[in-house]
Image (cartoon, rainbow over all chains, first blue to last red):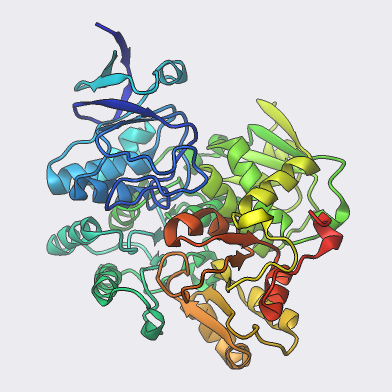
Length: 138
Length: 405
């Protein structure tokens, strides 16, 4: 079974993946190689990890306004995260996901969850995101 | 319009309001998705409806010979820059549109700006109003001439909720040095995240160059879209005004130790690059250098050029370059061996000579992103330290400011 939480939908969709709980905020531009999905920010605690197919969990957001483009490009290149769960709302990632859906018909759900729920997601948990912002964590 | 509505939903806005201008970041090539997106807009007959400036692109269109990468990638980068121009955007290709007299919004104007450093400058230094817009949203707002009535477009969201106070142990020599401002920006971004902060305890009447460096670094280490500096930024003549008469949710004292640690962390080169460490490159002008900064480089060079084998490169905007050309600064700098790059930036475009030695910069933002983007080791220092190091070919430290550490 597992825990169910509800997030506010910034970009809707369904996804299953293993959580990648980031130790620090990450700017997708300058932080992720859009061709491979690898984290290239050398000061980031998870430098070298791939975001591809993972449910990215971030307490806070950071950095560049080019992150919309980088998210859309990871979708095109097939190395996008499965979903993004945020502890604060972010227009830049929401719009990156919206454009990727429009161009490629692939949905990367982006949800804003209460911080207590974000903090309760264990590293490497199996996460399912359902239509409308419901999240199951096992 | 659909994208603007998506943005309005994400921001929780109930209505849209008109804007007087836009700054578009989407013209930087990140892959085919960026081209396919704008092609849809072109096919649909879209055109901007407000004066719109363009951010940096993938390459220097005026000096294409500086490109050292794959020519096919340069072609895609150039195509994207031209596609945005065909939508009616002005080919300014600068990350510092606030340095262009014609593009500077007045206090209180509602605009839609992308590019994290420009957003921070627009809100904080000009007192014009923009949300933290990103690629795709920027051009959507420029086409519709509308933004969601939410966030930093509204007065109450511009209130500082966090106070950063410079500690009493921060010496005057540090407060008066250029290098404090990017370092303090890194601290601000980490401490504030996306919150609006007010910084207390800085000298008043700070130059636009210092505020630019501060905001650019804060928008790299955090999601800072607006900050106040008491006595320098227009919505903070006093601490009380910046707080809009309210109580802050947090007050943090920034000690000299925290600043020193943040400054050290900006250098990735081995051992913290002490005095005498050989360097291969010095990169200045992130965000794009102002005329005052170009003049400062000439002053610090005082007739000398970079040491043999050392590259000294400054990024600036094409409009600024033309102004500097007019006053004779450009040929003087070039004759000393300084390279000038426009339309792009040295951590985006493959323009730097390949060197196994570290690259030095006065920019917190460049120091933050260059190691990941272009795979260089970085040494951070003030503009004076950078220029003198370029001349020496080795790191030179101004020990009167931060001490020998």
